[in-house]
Amino acid sequence: MGRLLPVALAPSGWPAVTLKPSGAMLLAMIRGGFTSGYAIKKAIEGMHTEAFWATTFAQIYPELARLETDGLVVRRDDSLGARRRSAYAITEAGAAAFDDWLRTAEQPPMELRDEGLLRLAFADALSVAERRELLRELRERAEREERRFRDEVLPVADALYETGLHAPRMVGRMGAEYHAWAASYFARIEGELDR
Amino acid sequence: MGRLLPVALAPSGWPAVTLKPSGAMLLAMIRGGFTSGYAIKKAIEGMHTEAFWATTFAQIYPELARLETDGLVVRRDDSLGARRRSAYAITEAGAAAFDDWLRTAEQPPMELRDEGLLRLAFADALSVAERRELLRELRERAEREERRFRDEVLPVADALYETGLHAPRMVGRMGAEYHAWAASYFARIEGELDR
DNA sequence: GGAAGCATGTAAAGTGTTACATGATTTT
DNA sequence: AAAATCATGTAACACTTTACATGCTTCC
Image 1 (cartoon, helix red, strand yellow):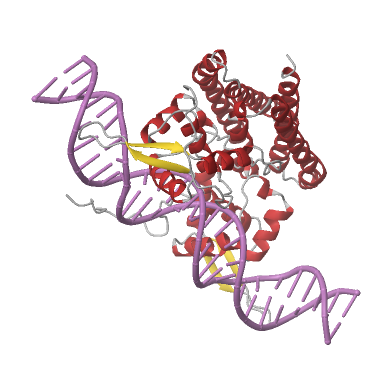
Image 2: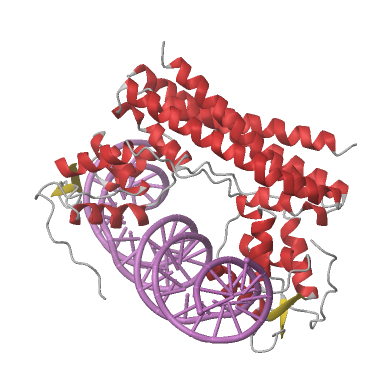
């Protein structure tokens, strides 16, 4: 992520806008110097922010238009020859909205919503052998995810850390360590099935 | 070229229907003896299955109608005097679809999608004091959730365990232990901020 | 008589996913 | 010349939440 771009001017006195995660993520990326929808998507992929809030082009482009309508960003044409391109910049109102979002004190409760855990909740309908098989599947899934975080997410987070961006490493480590913990939990429960 | 039309119908009474989590959960509850939409909702609340897959009446009633259309459940009138009520029963096709769902080998990757973690990913925009405050919030949230699992979910899961329903305790313990782990992770990261 | 619980739904809005569609530029 | 990448979007569908709407029965 490069230097922060200057905040564009917008009429003061805009009504305070309460951001949702998707909008906040876009503002954070624009603030970080990524100006086009395409560049933002690639940055989200490259920094593995998608591990915590996945998104698609079909969400990004309409959301950018909404942010512009709300006066949180301004758009200018940034086409290269015949290839059209938009460049977005964050406004004062946008920066204020992002700061408000980031400083929101109450965090909504984290959901554990997961189809695999739901299956486990109904595992009484399975034989002991099948229950062990399900637990093995869940453990292997957690191990795969842990490897993905260790091999792909953490190296990027470490590189960003060296440039002064410390936060991505905090969440990257959380992801890796969570999946390692989950794998050990499933292994333990699998062992208890023997008794 | 248009879509290919099916050249043969599945044997009647055994349509291959792939369930989604909401439908599977309803079938599991009907299978467990809860016959009305209202009773199913109360059972999901009472067993704290909502901790892993929350739902609302506005999802349950249309989904029950869809399951009936697909032949996975049958509805009969079960009104008490003037208070109308429907009673649903699972069909053979419904039981087969549920078994297929439960035995699906590949588990979709678990998402860590959480607004609190997304905030943490952008915490470089905060002062060190504010960053510590955010981590404290996240830790306290995890502690609240852990208490909720210990005080509300686990006692019910233990009671169900005594009646022979073992699976709810596996997921209930996972919830409690996950939130305890998360609290300790946030506490550790908070400590590292000092260095 | 009133409150609480039983029971079933619809409407509207918002959010998210998948598939499709188009065309330019750069790289091999 | 073909493939990959850059870049922007629409359409349709699926899912979820919030609010609303109705009326019955049981308990205090």
